[in-house]
Amino acid sequence: MARRPDDICARPDRIPHCPIAPFAMPIYPASVWECEHTDQAEQLLSGEMQGYVYQRDGHPNADVLSEKLRELHQTDNAAITSSGMAAMSLAVLSQLQAGDHVVLSKQLYGKSIQLLASELPRLGIDSTPVDTCDLTATAAAINEHTRLVVVETVANPMLKVADIEGLAELAHQGGSLLLVDNTFASPVLCQPARWGADLVLESISKIVNGHSDVMLGALCGPDAHWQRVARASSAWGLASSPFDSWLAARGLATMALRVERASDNALRIAKHLESRAQVADVVYPGLASSDEHQRATKYLGDKFGWMVTFRLNGGRDAANRFIQGAKRVPFCPSLGELSTTLSHPESTSHRAVPACERAALGIDGGTIRLSVGIESVDTIVAGLEDGLAYLA
Ligand SMILES: *Cc1c(COP(=O)(O)O)cnc(C)c1O
Image 1: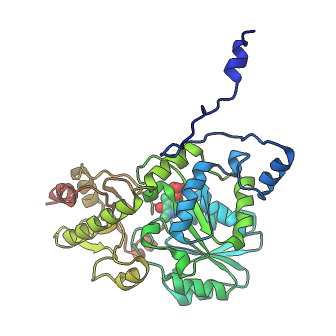
Image 2: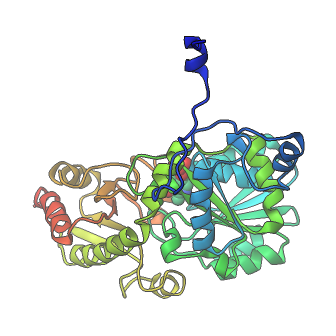
Image 3: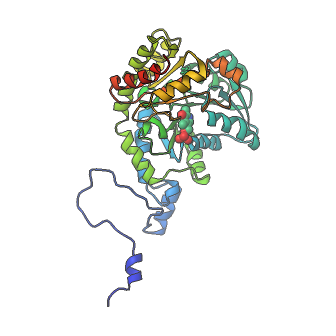
């Protein structure tokens, strides 16, 4: 008897039998997996048996990505989340409760400050922003309720490098965990867990994926905290999608190459900008003249990242003219793209920071932050020169 069309259409698809495995990673968009018997279902759901049941609890495309990040960071685990901010939420929701206190760097990513300083108080979790470059001030901010200290390896846009080892010691003395957002360094240049960080965050949306077409994040850490992390990720619904994870795994495959190339380009660009009369100052931890150079060498090694910040003489007006002229270096307020982009902290990432604090950080209307890409360095220099020529 011929099958009914509705039965044919609705039948679950199966991979035709093939004795060998595909060389490239397939995408597994399955929301649910098929269990063979009741004991197996229980074992899979309790985590006793490795495998998958429901996508929100884990899927192969996230696991491929997390396995590489876990190895790169030399941590026991890595959880892949729907964005970098979801990874920050996961850290907070898995490790903190009402009555706890958080110490955060004043130079964190803007949304991280919003989450930690504005959203958490609604949940009964207080926070204190502090200049984490000042260990004495950081120690003074830690109190008996502090459970989490949050810093970035390299902070935006003045590229301050955190003393991760010193901060880990302070945090641990106070009975607190150290969370390091490593997005501006990437796991190629720095592995904060090696220096004592308990939790490490990456926004995969940036250079890990590196192709400006994915939102994902990762939280890496030790077995000791992981049961809570895995539970919170599922219960709060912070997990990643298979397709995004697949794209990001493809991006990650070339991350080491891209970070090396972009970092080499960034050093050459920083040196070039230092020589230009229209530029008042250049911030790059790879410059021997930088205050950050020694600490950067300790934590980043011999490559110093792809971010370069410089200040044009002439304030915001000069920045606008530069942006108009530098057509080959688009004004895209993010970072970690394949090609070079620029951002303007005063009007984007730091627009909510009071003017006096911005001035104290060294940011004015003429401050431009580059995310250097992997083009040939001559092309990038030419693109920047187009902008500088508009200022002449
Ligand atoms: C972009 C970014 C985040 C947030 O990541 P999303 O993937 O955009 O949510 C966190 N920290 C830093 C340093 C970032 O640059």
